[in-house]
Image 1 (cartoon, rainbow, N blue to C red):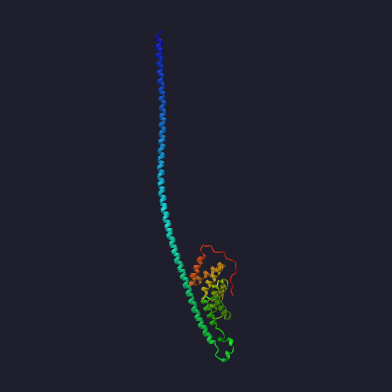
Image 2 (tube, rainbow, N blue to C red):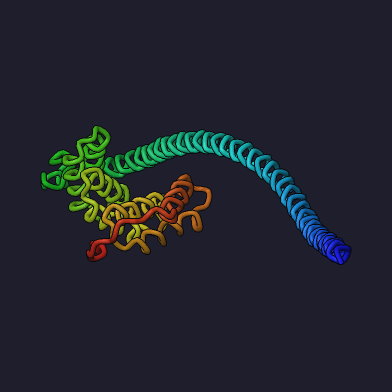
Length: 295
């Protein structure tokens, strides 16, 4: 009877060992499953890390390329700025040369025009003196009316020449008076066109542009075939521009000079003036005024 309790105890011990072994195997299986899960997670993390490293490398390459491109752009910008500076310097030089040439051309034009006018005036003066000499009375009875004799007062040529001297000396008030006197006494005189032209010039010099325009208009109206036509058209247009009235009319007169007198010095000046008028620079508003009327 005592042997049974011992056997029972042995059986209990064996059962306990068996239960312990079963529990240990289950834990091992759980640990194995957890290990496999961790392995999978580790592999996923490695893959993500590799992807991130690859992306970082790509970004580094792109960043280097961008830095290179920025460097190239900076060099290009510097080259463009240097080219622009050189171009601006060349344009300034060209503008200076053009300004000098225009000034020289204007001076040459003025001198040539002055010489032409002086030569024409000298020819007409000699012709007028010859006519005055021939018209002088040779018989005593014709010398009676003293008021009609050349000796009673200055001849037309003397009046004109006196006014011209005043004009050349820039005494424009006296010159205007002298030319006006000539035109009052001899409106159809030999040098009436020159007297009217110089009268307008004296008024222009005194900045009496409206009256000067009227006198230039007289020259154009009464002496359409005069050699002074190109110069008169130019001066008439300049009067209108100074008055800031009728800009369209001024442009028409300027355009007519190179069209009708392409080889004249005034044609080049007119073309230069037209280019300035057609430039994008804003023009001052025209003031309201009536057109200069011809007398």
